[in-house]
Image (cartoon, rainbow over all chains, first blue to last red; front, side, top):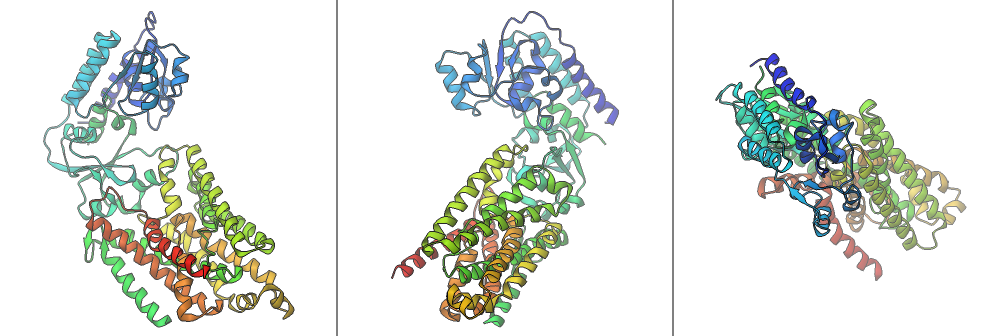
Length: 258
Length: 312
């Protein structure tokens, strides 16, 4: 596994992102959450009537560059109604009041659960592609993801922990746990709040951290605590780990890179 | 009394280095020096600063309910610190964090002590403080909602209730000079505060400078409580409880209460932080409870008892 390989994998997804042709805008689709934003930009950018504001934030969105030129909408029922969308995408629990209101008003709202394994990412990508009518494109995206995963080393047995803001550690059944497994690491955390003391009492071989956002908060500054300097670390763009999307394969490639 | 307090502090200091989420006993050096030492030092500093601020304010205002938290001084301090922290000022110039806290506390303290001169009763001063405190908390939530980092709003708990966990030695170094300076300043005000306790007119007729004492109380509180809130958030009730705990033993004279209040404040806050850590060891918690939860649970019933006592 080399850095060049990672760049090639990133390039493959980037090419897919850049390669769309604006065809007939058959439908107007609105997305209310970051994770559905990323899937929509990846699969059907020509149908976007509105993305959530977080889609443009490079600290949290894997598609911030593309989203900069796409329309935004505040996740409130009124703002969405004004766009007369044919389809609204949302996560199951976020913006639930707006989603309930839109459903009452007769809009077609599709809630997409956030997949926590690569198998579930494949299934959810295919399901959304079917609704959007972009099966060919989804097959290419999934093939790029699988090609990235296939190139990763197997069963190295080293222990790693994905440490998230506030000192939470990703458990084995989370997306980050699946990413660690794909990268050939054993997840040393059981999930939930860990805190710095317990982490340092049994330090892992590798600490995986989301890249620091450009703005300070206590939650994210915690990951910069000098006490953690003794453990080897690798930073991953937060956007690749936040959502169960094909971008998670890039996170696994970054962690596995030597 | 002082000797007993120092002994208690020594015992808790040792316990504080040996108790934590990683378990009981001597931990790995990195945990000992980079996690437990900073939080121990910070608990001592903040506890001492809040304890002596409470004693000085209660003496100056002749009101046993005066406290930097209850009067909103910690709130305005936290507001200043929040503005400096989340908009990146403290990241490019670290001393901006305690400085902004002190500026916020200074504005709050000056407003209150200015009002105190015109307050018809001591209850109206406490009401004014509660108003200031509520306004500061509202502005705090508003600032955190505006802050560019999406985690900011979830940190309202810290700024309202405080905590000393996971702070670094460099943050201790930022907090220590202003807290120590403010504490030293307040400790020297004994004579002036004793004179004020006779009433402002009496003190003035004796030729004792009441205005200067008031201004120094405001300055010392701004330094000690302001820097405390900037680094450890709005830990409440320490300044309120400590002098009231000591009064039955040491008497009403403010001068006799200042140093014992500083030491008891440090003792109380370190004990509360130890309870926080024991809670993590003993209970299945999602995270450490905020330090202010413990001080409020200890302090709030005390406040109710005090209110009943005052009514008689």
